[in-house]
Amino acid sequence: MTAFHHGLLNEQPVSLTVNGRGLVTVMMLNEMAAEFAAGYLTTEGIVPYADIESVMLTETGVSVLTKNPFKVLLPKKSVLSGCGGTASYLDPEKMPVLECCIPVPKDILTHAFSGGVIKAGGFGVKAFAEGKLAASTEDIGQFTALDKAVGRLLAEGIPPESTAVLVSGKVTADLVRKCLHAKISVLASKLPPTYLAAEVAKNGKLTLVY
Image 1 (cartoon, one colour):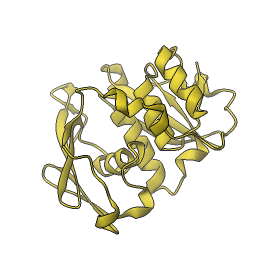
Image 2 (tube, helix red, strand yellow; image 1 turned 60 degrees about the vertical axis):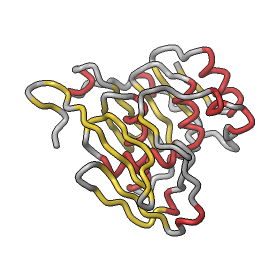
Image 3 (tube, helix red, strand yellow; image 1 turned 180 degrees about the vertical axis):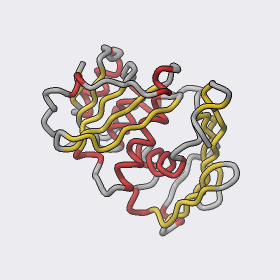
Image 4 (cartoon, rainbow, N blue to C red; image 1 turned 135 degrees about the vertical axis):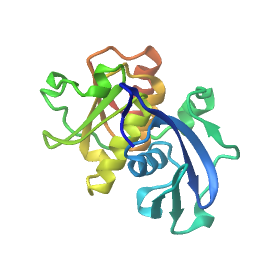
């Protein structure tokens, strides 16, 4: 599956199942689906990567099996991505608070996004570990691009908490929430964040750079 079809971004529905139960269907570029699955489960605080037994691609998406299915508490209803979050997701009492923060890379805002998906109106995410590019992803949505980046880091054995993340779009509160779940302590963008994003980041001790 390629990112483009007849010159247009090839948006596809990708369904994620966990232990045989449908969890979410996301409209995205059907590339790096396995990385998306691992990243999504991490950034949503559903399943730690260490608890994943296997990830298999299916005709409709991705199937994940966990080491102990009885420990996994999934949302009561399946969710179609793109219909927005709810205030409960941003409840300060339910949000993670980071215990440590890595130094902010001095040149993080100098990096450019120039891939074909970006030029076609998509979003990009770059993760840097010790000053070096550790993961670079693109997608039609910024959330899915982040999920793929986190999944790639995990697959490469790089702890997301050791990286600083740069996104091509505006930082929203929900994006900060996902980074907090992944223990990412530095989130950068050349665009200013929303006010709520800044408040959520402050409460979670995440550093925003813009």
